[in-house]
Image 1: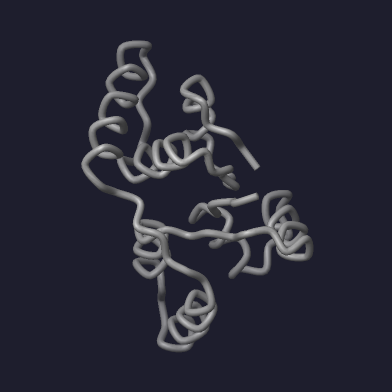
Image 2: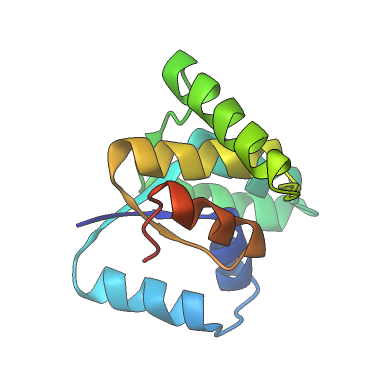
Length: 130
């Protein structure tokens, strides 16, 4: 099984917070599941780095993972469609990157491990939560 781990989970992990999502990540790792992260997720994480020491730690951790490209034209178009459909229902997703991540998971039938409330809106399009 492949699981894409969202920024929200990685941030909690690096802060040593034992949230339910982080504990689930550890279980997936112990079960030798395929853990994925994406280029957009890496970008979000690196944008939040506050020190050189933190950058070295995070960079080392992500060098052992394959960084998956998450956006291409089909994902961009479908993501915009999902956003418009949600907006018509009075729902505004806070971040474009979350729309892209959710759409990539739906398109590729990959489970998403997250702790971000915006992703729940994508269940109606076929998102599978880990």
